[in-house]
Image (cartoon, rainbow, N blue to C red; front, side, top):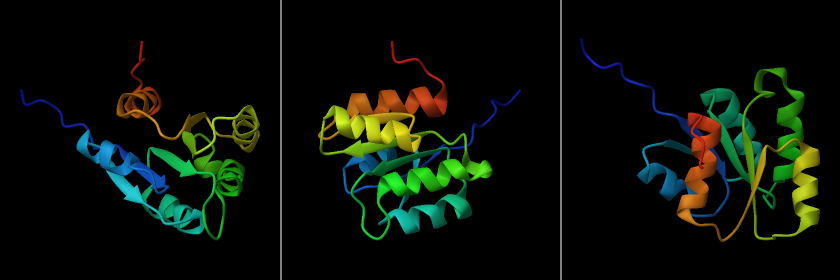
Length: 127
């Protein structure tokens, strides 16, 4: 009996960090977006398994994009991880209020990034 092939998980990344390269090297399909508006378009077109979104994006910031996604029933359960240059409690709180599932401060380790993605997309506990 041939082994079943699992579909490659798609990660939408709207950020200028190296997250896309790390995830592509780990076997994920990376869907890049230059800003929040493009992220919303890619989200509707390609139905990714997760969104990693910077807070400071041109045209439509990441927090606003997160709020819009959470208001859309079709994407209400999409895991959203916010990426930020700040480690502060204020940014973490704003992301949580916008509906983000997790927050990752830059610079982040490759292992930290992969641990979050595996937890939300693959259902693998990082412990």
